[in-house]
Amino acid sequence: MALNKVWMANHDAKTRPDHAEADGQEVGMDESFDVGGEQLMYPGDPAGSPGNIINCRCTVYYTSVQSLESEDEIGKALTKYSKTIPQLAVTREEYRALLRLKR
Image (cartoon, rainbow, N blue to C red):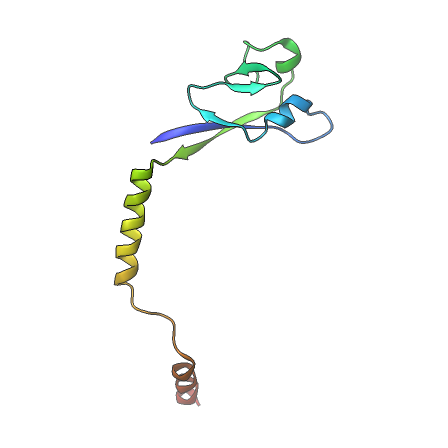
C-alpha cells in the first residue's frame, strides 16, 4: 500500500502564517513539504530555519494512495456484489399491501 503524508496545522492565533498556508499540503512519503519557501520533510524538521521549526505545533497524517488499477478492481467487485443482492425497495403498491396485511 502506498502512502502520502499531509501537513496539518493547528489553527489558532499562535499559528505561523506559513504553517497555516501549508495546511492540507499532500506530498509523497519521500517528498518534502514547501513551508515558507523551505523544504521540510516533517514539522520540526531540523533542516528548517529556527523561526520555522521552534515550538512548531503542526503534525503530519497519512493517506493511502490507490492506483487506478486497484480502484478498477474495487469497482468490479462492488458491481458483482450489487448484482447478487436482491432488490430491497418495494413499490408503493407492495407497501400498501403490506400495511393491509398488518391490520
